Length: 53
Image 1: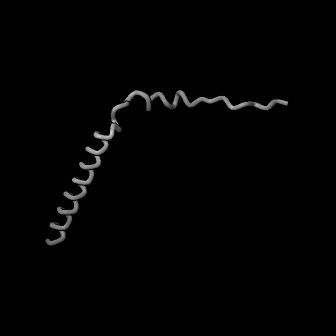
Image 2: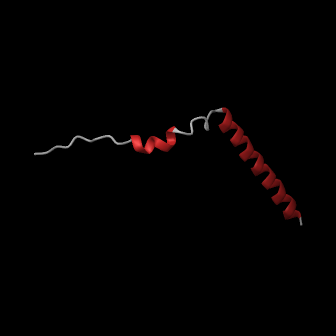
Image 3: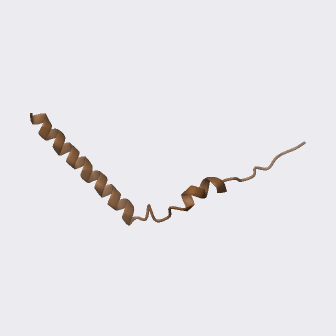
């Protein structure tokens, strides 16, 4: 029965850590730009010089 109390405490602590990480991400602007990451894969086409002999 004591393990249940330990597991509940660990789960609450883990939930608080994830909640703090979520608020940190919101304050640092991680979710401000939702458009650019979706098109970034389309803009990475750099042509490499081709050496033809």
